[in-house]
Length: 510
Image (tube, rainbow, N blue to C red; front, side, top):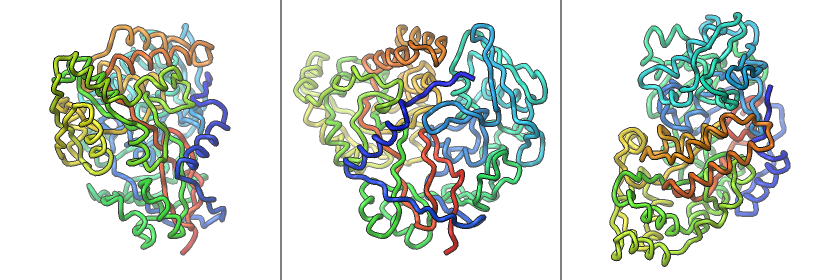
């Protein structure tokens, strides 16, 4: 199977964590006790926008969906595609077909067979269903042939060596055909997968209760009997929630790292693909003027934003991939230094000598949005914060495309081309303006047709990044790790760039 490192050697991951520690974060030593077999883990995180990977509208959903679904492949800790439901794959026909071999005896959580035919129907549903949000990633799939109950062949309309990585995320999560063929909409609240857990109770906006799935192919490595996914409504109360037992593990704001340590909690900084960004719709005035979007890129002080809103935990970044990722282009590091005078000059050249007035749309005004507002003011970009409900964000920004400027975070994707397609592609969820330069589309083809073990592969990805950063309006700010606080009763969490997993995690008895 073709293999390619998304990150340079593992030592780089260690250096990333050490850099984060030097910036004001830090990791305490994880507990090494074996804990007990069974027990319940209460995870303070977020519920997914839907439990259906085909209609999921947030990249962050992959973390919750991975609890109930298995994908064709998985990414290892360095970003390689490795065995998931499939144990092997092989390309043929110059990259226009790839044959996968499934594990024998796979079943969905309801006991029905997860065979090559089920995979074929599930993946083609992602390509063909009218409201699918992963359809653009599967456009090149002409058909899927069932070779045997444990083998299927994906036929492509052009060479595409990104398929194994692509199928490690939501695009490759296999949904039981019995469920979606009976009632596709019901899957959004009743997931039908073959993951490590099964959903037993869902209270929208509050929590989801799950039980260990005894038919999961790697169930021997799942030590938790039950799992509770609980929404964190007030990030400022996370430490108190962990102390009281409301959570066992919870997403922690960087501002609370010291408080968590002082409370005797363990703190994990897990390197991730997440980059904070200002989403800009260049079909909405004044951002339909390229000089205005360029001015915006010079009007933000990324280092100050990282220090104030991120409490120094992370790294300044001007592009969609973090340092160390094969797509990270070092030539872009100092492309947009903070320069409000240059921003004002660009606004004047765009026909706005007195500056511009625009709304800044957000569900959480405190922190980054308010700091961005202050910085932009110095460059002549006057913003009024427009508050929306968290549930409206995806709909307004990425579905209806009627928001001009909004702070957000890009969670990254399993395939480098998939990631670039999301932020820069003509159907990209995080490209609300839907503008993609011809040169970038040509570069996408170059990435797609280059095997990942080719010496020119990394350069192909980096060249695409350069085009996107320079010609499209997204304003990249800084990378952030996943920050978790956990009870000392909980063993160390696995470190995986793309998704938070709970393989091997144990909870000791109180």
